[in-house]
Image (cartoon, rainbow, N blue to C red; front, side, top):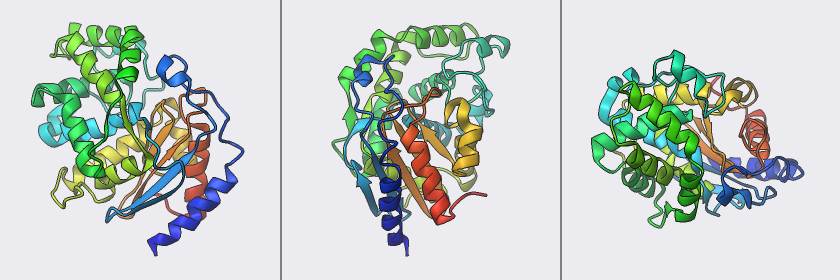
Length: 305
């Protein structure tokens, strides 16, 4: 029955063909600015790990903020509820790299998916493992089944060169005692994390543990059922920058976007999706990607609501 999703993907790709090309790639990261906004890929992975897709669904791209979901899962698995003493779970309502909110909230980021929150989570994981970015890469390789998945050094270097705002966020939180890793080390780990290249197929399969309520691809448990629910909830309310309300309204699934043009989404108990198209709207979300997920949930009737 699940294989019937493939004709749905083909229909979605046909319907949104004219939208691929709208929006602009993330030009504030020079290594991403050259991406072709006409590119499009979409994959669905069933809970048993089988995957299929349309378009450029097996082409690697820069995952960027999509990786924040996996770093959060690894940290929550190791640290449990103590993590939430250092980062909140509320939508921000401000740009993802805002400094303003941090000051009146005394260095505690609003949620794990804005840049400040992701820096805190990376800091916690690095202190727990000694190698935050390596732990993330190993996890993604294991869950996706792709041992070639790796960092893009050019993208990491480009982000480092233009990373002043993230450095400011990290130093500011360190002044409140909410960052323990030396800031240069933390920034290196964070930029490496964001530079990981993966395809729609890789990410759809790797996200499967959230559809399986915390169970990994090999059958072992990473998260409790409650922790998987927590991550899906934060994805729904905070996963698409300050457009999360509109995304929930239109798509009705937990999702996480990245400025590389990818969006992952979860249908708990059923499947996971990844769509990629580099043309972004003014809030940093893929124009074609949001429409594709909207059409997918409309056609299939799948939603968490």
